[in-house]
Image (tube, rainbow, N blue to C red; front, side, top):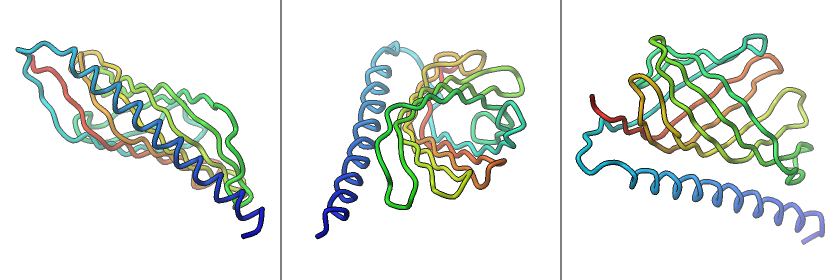
Length: 173
């Protein structure tokens, strides 16, 4: 095996390891948050799936999904340390974000994400794979908890797509 191939194999293993660690940390944090719930509380719990798109000239994503219906999402992403080349001429970096999903009635869900973003050599194309933790909410989402995956891609420099998939638990009124 050439040294270049070995280097790529090691980089790929490190990237996979970072993603597994990030997903574990978010999952463990979500499990400890669930333990803080009152014993007597009744929850509406279930699948949480949302699809969003955004033209980069718009201030927020336009979303539609389970539980939230039509909504807007603001994404504040922070780039972490550069991890390295991904072998295709692009590179990857650590990524974290705070995201607020606002339903039409003004109720919000706040998500914290951690993961990895990779940029292709093709200008404008990037993929971000993060795990998310619902940190809480307001209105009908007050006290919400949940975890899952948060995957974003840019198809070209002007359009972004986002898919959120996981679970959510919301206290009943």
